[in-house]
Length: 243
Ligand code: BTN
Image (tube, helix red, strand yellow):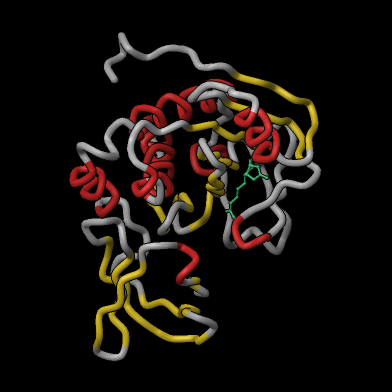
């Protein structure tokens, strides 16, 4: 998508809601167009992956969901998860941060999480729920060592609506590359792969194991060497990185 092709997509704002992912799903069912964003200042039941609660600070962080109606086949939908992480990284980089994707799509800065992404598919649309710590100046003690914000890393506040709109555009631009340019998408992800070379403890089918991450394979799979063998995981629910 060239800058000339970029256009404004609908943005629905709510002061408070349970979860923007639920609102986006409902809007998608009613026919909301590709690229529509639901943004809420407060989420009372924000959720993360694996049923975890997602807390966001009103007026400081951003919590929003983008309705995506990909033109490519449903078989390629799993790629969207990776695309979202990359699309967010690119926006952070534009603002001077060094961002990495922790497979499949957490976004990390200086070894700490700055953004979480929850992808949920409905019949005809994919909902990309994005929670990003923009102007958060402090975190509760239990999160201090694992979470960061754009403000903490850059020492300045950002215009949240501008960041939202940049991520929305970035997402839509990167989505256009899923079926015809995935090799270079993978290359860009490899350059930003937080886990590569790291020794990790992981849970696979409820069994805890130790392995060393070798990187991201050509189909977006996470490659881990474990007990002398290379294992590949294509879906985030096949594996949980514990530490
Ligand atoms: C994770 O890291 O586990 C994913 C967090 C995703 C949070 C976002 S905030 C906007 C959207 N609405 C939700 O309820 N969750 C996502």
